[in-house]
Length: 220
Length: 140
Image (cartoon, rainbow over all chains, first blue to last red; front, side):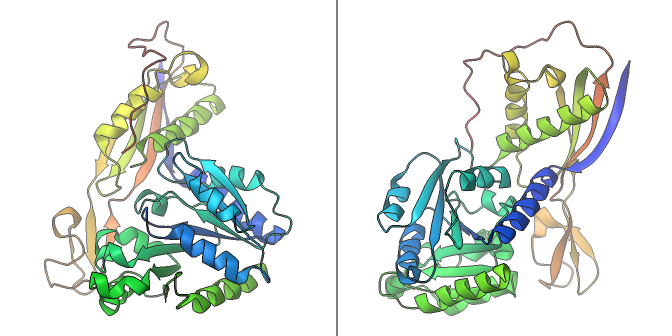
């Protein structure tokens, strides 16, 4: 005899629950977690290096690096004296809440206030899975073009903040920042946007203020 | 995209439900898949066949050889300005009735496990066993 059991359950439901639980626990522990998403080569590691150096006397930062197979990024972060751990996603195209938790558990975070999850370099899959982070931040680098929001609408519409990196190269790529911001605001009216150059330091202060402001709001 | 990780998550949920219901074996799993969910049917089916036929205890016998049934859900967008609906795949964000961009996806991004069919007895043999050495499907 065969019988039918009805589930009517969304496939992401279990992950969503795990993510909510992780978010709550981290808040209680006093750790502000940011999920950082972007294409490969957008300057994530360079942005983080500069952020760590600028904020270091005040705020202790750790980085969770999710890369498909490599630990080059982790070495660059550790050279700055920040804690980092490499999470190998075993070929997976995104991080989920369970993998994020496992990565965080592998580090000593007792003195850390901000942890960045450097998600897999991909603009599609990471947008669909909640990692348990308090804020989702996306990076768009100038060489990628001002029309990128039109190609990956989900990523741009779900992020809390957008950092536009490599602004020192704007004139070489005829990047229209006004048009870019317009496209993004259409998809996501509430998003906060920070144009920065980690190389010259331009705009870095606004981005770092955003981090401090949200850290204070989340950790109380 | 992330078909393989989604398949693992579906398998885990279905095995749990079957065990809670004291069902020894799942013969089929029915999922509802929106046409703009971003999941590609062919990849999903390939990943599924591989994941439910792994040798030894890599696949739980409860779900071994279970069939995957996909029920598609049409993608429909609703226009806030003219209050009409239209085919998302054909027209995307801009309403074909009035040209407005003030639109939102009404349905079509679902990925739901609808139901499982279970046998009350364990089948005596499993067909199409795949070798342990079979490489996993490559993630796109």
